[in-house]
Image (cartoon, rainbow, N blue to C red; front, side):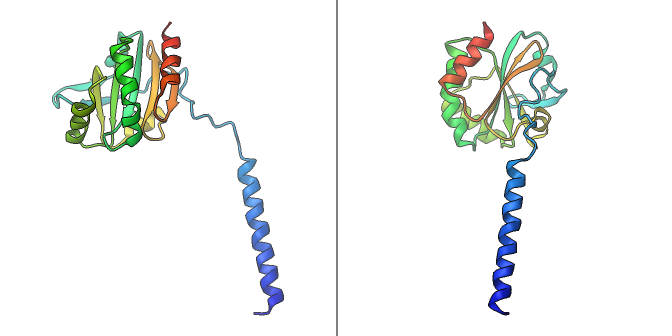
Length: 172
């Protein structure tokens, strides 16, 4: 092929890539990762991590004014990083934390909790990630604050001191 055609093809390719890039930059910014804020928690039935015969459902939140729901997994390195903050929320601040074990093996999850401590009052198993999808979760870790059955706050990624302080402010 002639050099002139190669240059034309290269130029057209660059223009197409540039147009696609601009399209992505100007895409709809109305999508909210926090679209569940203000909505009730979805209905669910999950197996309890420590008692296979117990099923967890929405009654877990029914009589609770304020809870933290944390999605985690034993294979998740950021979950290890946030774990001391969860322990602090439970031990020092007496926050009720419910765990959602995400796409994990029960044995590994139990070993993780044995090694790092268990901040959760109850842990539901979400082997296929179906409940996490209903919540609008992107992965692990993610943390939700639930007040009287409604989601009032969501944090994507490992929690830190700033997030702990935000959670404590919400509880007041």
